[in-house]
Amino acid sequence: MNMVRFQNNSGNISLSPEVFTTLVGEAATSCFGVKGMAMRSVTDGLVHLLKRESMHKGVYIKYSESSSVSIELHIIVDDGVNLPALCRSIISEVRYKVSEATGVTVERVDVFVDSISKD
Image (cartoon, rainbow, N blue to C red; front, side, top):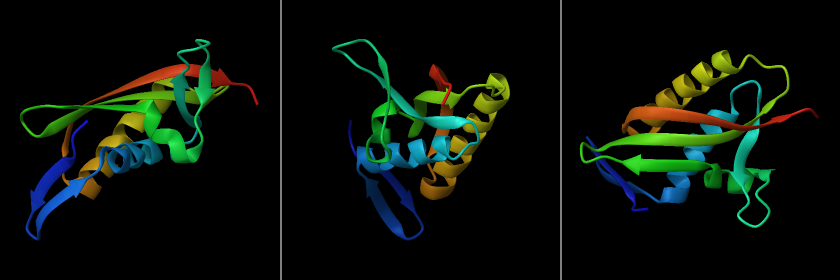
């Protein structure tokens, strides 16, 4: 993944992919009902809850030629939450925080609930 680059009135800004995906992960996990970011293990096929410092691994970014991004999130949610409402909240929060912090246009946010946590 390349550096995320954008321009504003003050000049040019570059973000490493880890910083950008961590920003996205923090926006998603700030929503009530999200236990954390998820990643499926290649070795055992199980879904694992990522620690805060590794949450960027549950975020995938696709850059378009129009300088916008599409975001794919893999999450673990708390048992009993309203999944459609939670996903709408995550999409809204991620769009807002990314555009507010970076000015990058978010074309699409896809949320994948990989697991439900009962604890």
